Length: 284
Image (cartoon, rainbow, N blue to C red; front, side, top):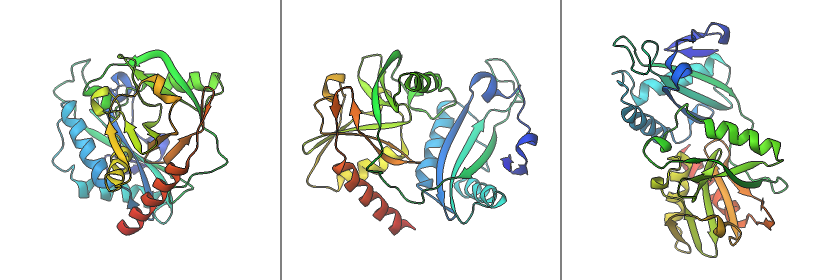
C-alpha cells in the first residue's frame, strides 16, 4: 500500500500521472528513512533537511506539514503494509503536483507520497567478509552549490554512475566535483581515515547533506583520540589512506575494501558502528 496525500492506495491506484512535475521535471524531493519497530531513525534531522530543501526549491510548504503529521502518516503507511513491528525502508517523496511547464502553474500544489518495504537489518552491522571495490567515476562531475546538496529526484549522475559500476564489476564509484576533488560515493558520503586524522568533504564541495554524515561527525567530535577535518579530498590521497568508508542511513557504514591496487582495513569503521548502535539504543 502507498500513502498518497494521506490516502492509502494500492500501487496500481497510486494516482501518480505522467503530468506529475516530479516525473516530468524532477521537481521533487525525497527522504529515505530507516524505521525499526515504529521508531524512525534520526527523524528530526530528516524532517528539517526536507523543510530546508523545500524552501531552497521555493515550494510552498503546506501548513499541515508538521513533524508530527508526517511521522503519523509514515507510521500509518507502515501499519498498512504490516511493517510497524519490524524493520523497514521508507521513502517519503514530496513534489509540486501537476500544472505548468518549467514554471509551475498557479494551481500546482505540493503533494506527498510514502512507500515502504521490508529491510532485514534492524541495527547497523559490518560484514567482515563483504567486499566493496570502487573506482573514480569521471564521465560527469558535480558542480558545487546549494542544489547539489539536495536529496532531489534529479539523480542522473547516480543512475548512470551505477550503470558504469555494474559494467566494470565495481560495487560503487566515487564522485568528483568540477574542481576534481572527491566528494562522495554514488549512494552516500565519504570518510577517509589516515592515522588519527579523519577527513570528509565539506558541504561546500557539493556533497549531499547526509543525515548519517551528521551522526558520524557528532560521534567523532566526542572522540578525543582523533582529529576531524571537513576538507577537500584529492584522488591522490585515496591510496595513502588507512581506511575509506561510505555512510548512509540505510546501511550505516560501509567500508571500502579496495580502490585500484590499494586494499583497506575496517577496524575504525567497526568501532564507529558499535558507537552508532549504542547511541541508537539510548534513543530507543
